[in-house]
Image 1 (cartoon, rainbow, N blue to C red):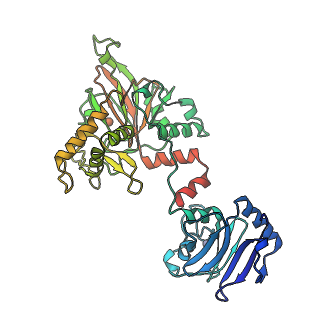
Image 2: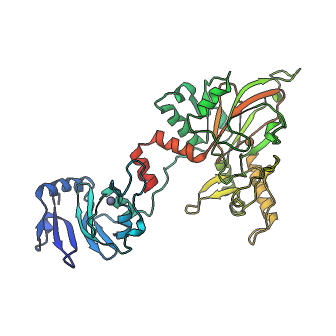
Image 3: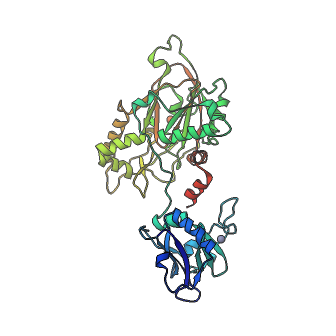
Length: 447
Ligand SMILES: [Fe+2]
Ligand SMILES: [Zn+2]
């Protein structure tokens, strides 16, 4: 059964064609047309390489039926005509520079039918009633015969707790600055996997070097606080982050519809308060990191009801500390945002100080939410969940603010810290483009 022939015969009407792929032993007697042997041979090669992708190809009401080769199954045989025509990627249908669609989908008749369909060396060719020709590769056809949509890149997420401080993910500054982007690939991949990374060997005399480093990932996000920041404690900005008190684990910008994707801190210098030695535990202060996805996983295992409450009760969040500014997200958001399709945790939003009034819902009273949040808060404060790190000049910390909560112990003296936010979409785009070939990326994100 190793050899294949492509045969074509008319089907229901003169305008319809069927192309059938069969092992030579099963060639039907009513063969009317045999494709040129060279074409057949090259297609047979493709067919063998992919274990014979199809047995039968025909125009049917509603689209094109592709029957997979014997021994393989497909979730759906018929791919709709309008859907296929809409997904033509030829150079007249898609602008090859911008990858944008170049035609109005709604100019296509809703019941468009192919005139002719035939196998090609790499997939199928379709000729439409208006003479337009489209080609679809096997990889595209087979994917949608078996799947409903493309999925995001698979991610091997590494969950962590206190032990992450022993050997935190770290990338060398010199590598990140290499023009070939290999260091950016490594840095963004580490942040994607672990939720955070340090960049070792960063110059710290001038905060400008940190800004340039962060811009290797993507441009800096402007907020009502400004863009790249370089601060010493004072209350001018009316936010507790600008003082030297301890801060419990939280995520930043819970009050944005699209909270900051990445957050970074670089401790440029620390001067001890008069009379306080640097050995004093309180002098330097330590930074706290909590893997919010790990904490949520613990909550889900130990107390699924609380997990459910924190994922369902949608709360108001706000930033109102600056005159003339009141920022709130486009709608209320829960602490644990789940993916609507998969039910998987998507984003953690947690800053108890920026939270508004707990609402009354049909399903849960505020008491239920407080109980669930108390449980969540107690997990975030567990010794095995809290990861304490010492910020040092030359070692900026960059972390995923949708996953990792941060905080700090109290400190004395004057710390100079710089950093910035980077938007999630821009960071992910940079991660994709430095870690995967462009063709793979386009296939995944366009479909
Ligand atoms: Fe913060
Ligand atoms: Zn086209």
